[in-house]
Image 1 (cartoon, rainbow, N blue to C red):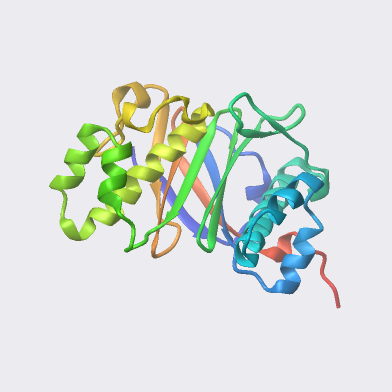
Image 2: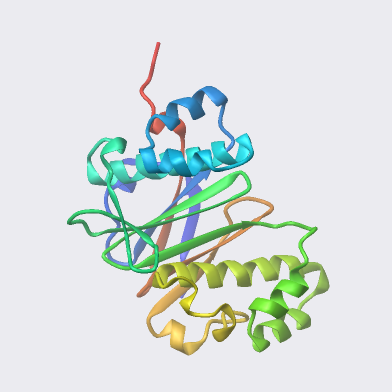
Length: 244
């Protein structure tokens, strides 16, 4: 079944928790002005600031800050509270979840200058984004982490597209694992998603490829069926007060 998706400006409906077969995906641009990053830093809690401070390079620290402040901003819109009021808990294998009695399920992924935040209601969800890098030794990684069927499928594809297809396979796997919320207790080479997901996956989950921007690949995994993916751009102005 085809899934409709496109990137657009956020609208009022995007702040209602998606129901039925709908899923919301927010695209976050991490390359923000230093003054904006400083303001977003104030939205993080102590634990998030401690994690950000561990990065060696300022660029990585700033990207982390923007991604996690944006996550707070997005979730606060659905919850109807201030971003600083969003509370998280950690599930058994480390997957974060909103603390409290809520139907919201979310997942966050970032790579390069972009992040994606996926939102669903009452069903598990995972998202992964990866920057396509020409210097990546994808063949070694595929042999190490992919199933034999996936390695064979990559070898049979157009050589000029193999890097993109590698990223497609990788993001599908990561999104699926993140949706399950079981960490790496399920080895990456123990299931197949290329050229198509195993039946054992599709009986419960649906995996959809996303195209967030040129030079990036991404995938979404959701429990149940997906009818529509509504994609919106997050902007810092949604999180920060307007000053004159």
